[in-house]
Length: 394
Image 1 (tube, helix red, strand yellow):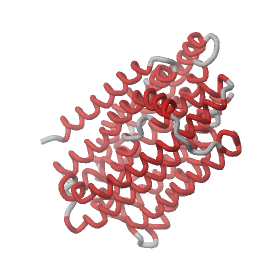
Image 2 (cartoon, one colour; image 1 turned 60 degrees about the vertical axis):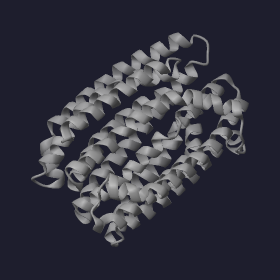
Image 3 (cartoon, one colour; image 1 turned 90 degrees about the horizontal axis):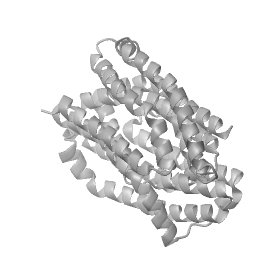
Image 4 (cartoon, one colour; image 1 turned 180 degrees about the vertical axis):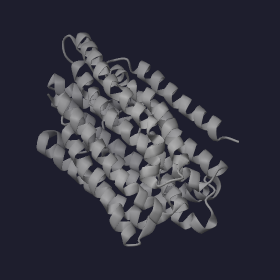
């Protein structure tokens, strides 16, 4: 029951986010204009790099808490959360500091932003780094919720704050004329509110775990990082795809092309988010299954069932998305947006293969063969980067 609940609420939060994004994105694009929307999209690179540098901590903490909870070992779960909190604060400080130091070089030399837009680009990058730092520092609370089998609580918080309230905030901010600085401030506020709610949610469902103070245990830290290196490797490669594509477009084509890519990526990514969230609930379930008797049989049964139902959803969904990319772009953004339609079709064709393999990825990583999931994740990301270079490069 908890697996189904977690899967449905996970998919639901992404579906809600997709609807609100579809409503808000055209307004933001037309209000900001193509180049300023492209500047705002560059801030997404900071989030990608922040997730890149998390040492796989989130996934490692989910795994440790899920296994400890299945064994009835609350002390081990508390030690993992306490140490993860210390690690997360250090990573958050590093993210904010790195963005502050590197922003001038990034804006002027890497992205080659026109002089008239550089101040706004700097605000977008530094502000988004602050958002990423807050999210990183608060991530252990959400990971612990996942680990104790209450992913639905975290899903509800994310849906309300980040998928509904935050997009509606875009309408308010741009309607008031506050532009990119206003969008940054809105995102900072949303990150703070979400972090507070994750902590309160954990206090409600696992009060003893939430009450454990932040502390440092070297052995626990080594265990977290040892498991996390597999998730980190995949995240590292995956997080490189978006920055690589946007950087190539910014340098070789221009900010308008970055904006078109961003819009296409949001459409295909939202679809991937919905379907990926269904599969994501498998990870803590597979980790818990691996802690009991008959672990091998339980994981195999879980994998076979998940792959069958997941395939029935993924392939038809992306087939429809790719087939209707042209009419969708015209109806959504107006005529003459073949660039967005082409982007949706190309990205959709790539996403379908990656998303269809997610059950195998999650069960392998949580079930004792993280090396297999690492190879699969690295291969997928490598193909994506190579395709971007071939299609966009000079």
